[in-house]
Image (cartoon, rainbow, N blue to C red; front, side, top):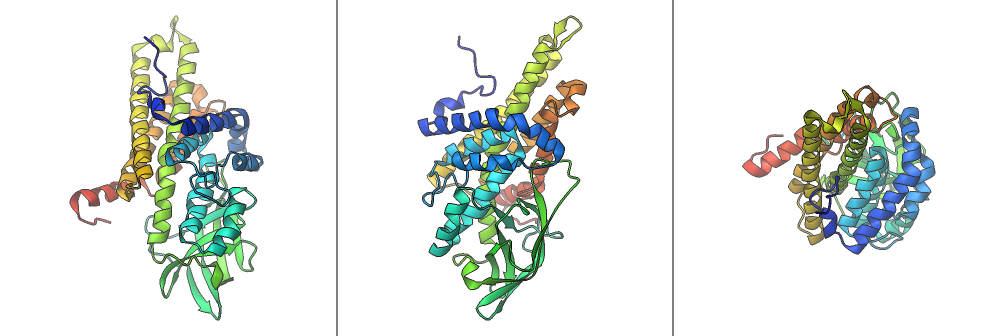
Length: 387
């Protein structure tokens, strides 16, 4: 019998198309050659490796599943596999790509004017410009409709006032998509970050997503022209649809983090000899590794099915919620279990498990906490809104 792939027990890779295989192989090579040699040091130093941005652009990672404007036009499963390989490197790297692609380029592509698309999408796809997504506020968290940032008309312009919190890429961004309350409901504003009255401040002392820039944004009478408003969406439907896109990528991405942890634990346990035999020869360790593989396999099935639904155009927000909830929880439990298998060595950045474990604590929280996704599914099941 042919041995099974330890990281793909149900051979889901056999279902991938040639485009999907080529995408995964190219991104995996980039992660192995360019990301893994630097990411532990970047995590320890609390810095994002900006030198990787041009390589990510060359891979077509920005707006990968969008058509035109210099975007790669990949299928949804290929994009998911890209997220998987990037997060095998680090959640911060996948977050960078998710924000650029799903939270900035997607809304411009979907809700923007022709002029906005021509101005921003090619520059964002090439990595010449970096974007960030301003929705979350210090007091808002899981209740984004409780938004205090507001915009009012002033002649042909708008004046924006307020603040945003926990913004990935905030201080790196050339453009911030700011969601603000107006007299006509929530609107999206493309704010150039060199505008007068716009400021960002990085959030320090994080113990998670350290290889990622997280910022607070401040807007004090920031003047933007009416041409900077996304014309084709009003209300919370706009930002929430962006979050659905990002959550799709997360569902795939955390599979990569889980695979990295399992591969590392298998190598370590196979080489570590205690009481005259390798750890992998003990029942306790085999049972734990088997449980990790079971959780990983279920997450892979969730991600692949989500990709099929998205490709068919039938994906719903509830389906994304149940998959994001399940997969991030599974990946976090895998990282914790694998960290423990490494013993004392597992608490150092010489190994990846502690880094993935700490990162996944944030991934469990952002783009909708686990509780929010449970309530989304509960509402679907009961028809009752318990928020």
